[in-house]
Amino acid sequence: MSKTTSGDFTKTAGWLDWYTGPSQPRFQLPAGAVDAHCHVFGPGAEFPYAPERKYTPCDASKAELFALRDHLGFARNVIVQATCHGADNRAMVDACRASGNQARGVATVRRSITDAQLQELHDAGVRGVRFNFVKRLVDFTPKEELMEIAGRIAKLGWHVVIYFEAVDLPELWDFFTALPTTVVVDHMGRPDVSQPVDGPEFALFLQFMRQHPNVWSKVSCPERLSVTGPKALDGEPAAYRDVVPFARRVVEEFPDRVLWGTDWPHPNLKDHMPDDGLLVDFIPHIAPTPELQRKLLVDNPMRLYWPEEV
Ligand SMILES: O=C(O)c1cc(C(=O)O)oc(=O)c1
Image 1 (cartoon, rainbow, N blue to C red):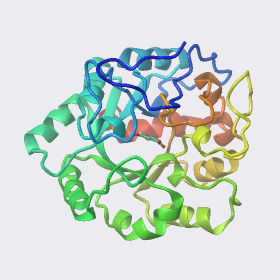
Image 2: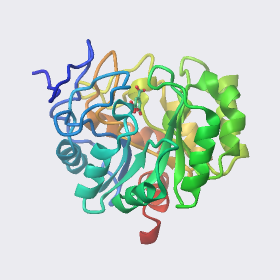
Image 3: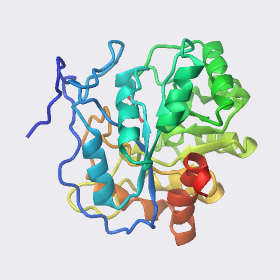
Image 4: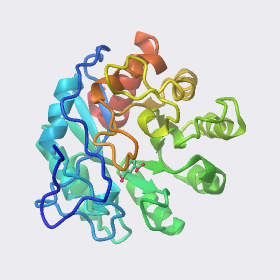
């Protein structure tokens, strides 16, 4: 049955709902594993979607996120502000507050935010801001405004999460490398995985990480990056094989600067919705040893989001 969008909202035409009844992963996550990239959507009746949004999703509540966390075997979440909520962080903040210190947040803020409001976000568990350069998701924000925000949040010990397409990295390079904080790249900077892993496009991304020790990467979203699959559906134990060489290269070269997340509820997928249990089974293909798995899923996210517990 199709999922709903509550309140005065209608889902974007062709919207794919998140997968109901995900399988039990075969891969057992290490104790204390963090799902370091996921979202909540609304519910729209309680937390309305932003007027400037580029899509209207089905609702995906905090209760549903926490149920998925428990089912898959994660201990904690990092909830990233989704663009359909603009700079209205209430749904994400509400989820962080309700988590009992088991969730941290990454917010979207405008330069008009006050220091008191930043402190309020911090108290709720927010530890980063997201700068989005994917044109189908957001309108352009001037770089000087973003740099001003980065300077302010640096003082709180927060980091900047950046989302961009691989083809745009050359143009954004100078801005990214001038950021004064830890910088976390969403989804490996969206490589075109039909190109060779040793090709010039991915080489530039690896060089970006190599030259800048403050840059981290989420090795997430194979379901979004894959061209040839196979899909994480119908019990497939080795899904998205075309993405594996890219993610594995990043994990093996930068084991202390990688994060992994489900990306649930997977906004804007066009082809299929993955079974999140099978998505977890992708992890040992890109982080083949227990040590790499522990760094990716526990040590790294804990150092970035719960440093007081490390
Ligand atoms: O590629 C996307 O469509 C996408 C969108 C969002 C968002 O709308 O925030 O977040 C993601 O991580 C990925």
